[in-house]
Image 1 (cartoon, helix red, strand yellow):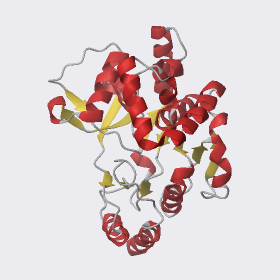
Image 2: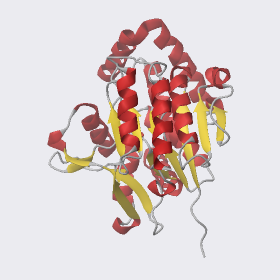
Image 3: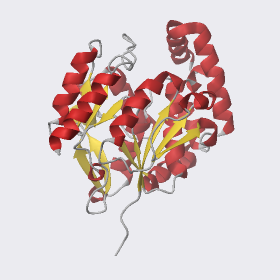
Image 4: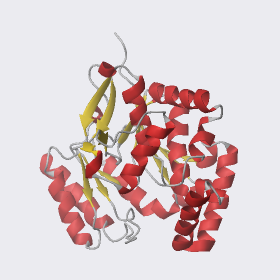
Length: 323
């Protein structure tokens, strides 16, 4: 009888997300996922800031242990540039790189891009059958379960949320278009495309390695060089992986599952309101995870320190109510 697929959780993070990571860790500790191995890959220069973070199932790794040395060095250089120029200057540099075909090069190595490479590099090197990416701003709810990440019949599992291309635009449209270009797949704007880019995101390591081999064979370069050569802010590791599954695996080899169990909170301005909303979700059996988008929009940079105690208390009340 074949053994059950092995599974781990992965969180790429940095010092700016330490408070969010603490909330994630607290939620994991109270959840049915508490004993699942959890790897946190921390930007190398921030590893000391995470001393003592996580729980018994957490293992901290520096990004230098996962990324090729050349990437981690250039990532640190890019971080210094971004610090000097500020958010507006960094975004302007990214826009310039789009217009010039890639210059300045340092913007390709900023944290958002290299975190994508980190996820793929970790999973490609992993001995686990399945690596579940879980960002720092995720809160794990009491109804979460290992079955959320593994198909009972042994198929590859991937979340999806299809919409017509005409129904969305902006970054999701760019990510889908670039994935098609990268994989030599014609882009038909009349088709339906996946718009689920949140975490948890399930990576089947054997399928991921097949994707990376395909990229190297197609472009004649290491896969990470291929991806870091893509237009800045225009590519997504999730869109690329998902399209590869659809085009290169047999139709019946993948279980496409709705991402409805992942919920979202887009406004963290009122910490007590965040706590109330999280508590309400703990009582909803169809809600397994919630992402608190406190930094994603770039318009409001709420930290987690305000809502953290309310969220942790809400989880404790919700867990007690279910016992």
